[in-house]
Length: 256
Image (cartoon, rainbow, N blue to C red; front, side):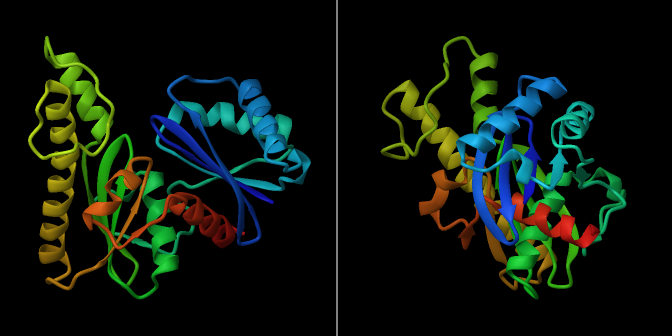
């Protein structure tokens, strides 16, 4: 079995594949750094809790936007699983043509999303929206060219900026407000966060479609922890929470 890990700024999103079948998924905060032993104990425990034998894990595929955890993760798998994990990083086979001026700058999580989406929707232009710590949009052509991306603050990051930068505005629950115009400070913040994100994604998607796909509407694929919040806004054609894990599995297979 293959253990896939998407290491983000806020969470570790993991899943176990048995062939092409995703057996289970789990999340762990990544804001608190861990030692190799702490990672090892956590992974072995969470696997057992999901009725998966840790010794049945034959390989691991990892993408990370947090470079300082890689050393601990590698040592974790060497000590507790007895193999060297696969890292999605520059130089490995992805099946994509990276059109960044400096391909080394593209986040491994964005590449994993692009690989996953291109595998699900072959031969289609793609717009991938990741509602994570940051809200990002990435464009992939039907020829599997990674054209570039857009990075904006995510809804939780925006809320944190409001809370830390003002005297009277406090953190609120991130939900769809009952009306566009709030009738309290909390509702007004919720409206700004929610509808601000909706307007941003909708506007940017239209700009990318016109500028890079000649107006030919791409398949819009969403992923990320906050993606489900916007499911009713017709911002995307498909919401696939496991998209980075799917891309990691395909990248690992290509590397073998």
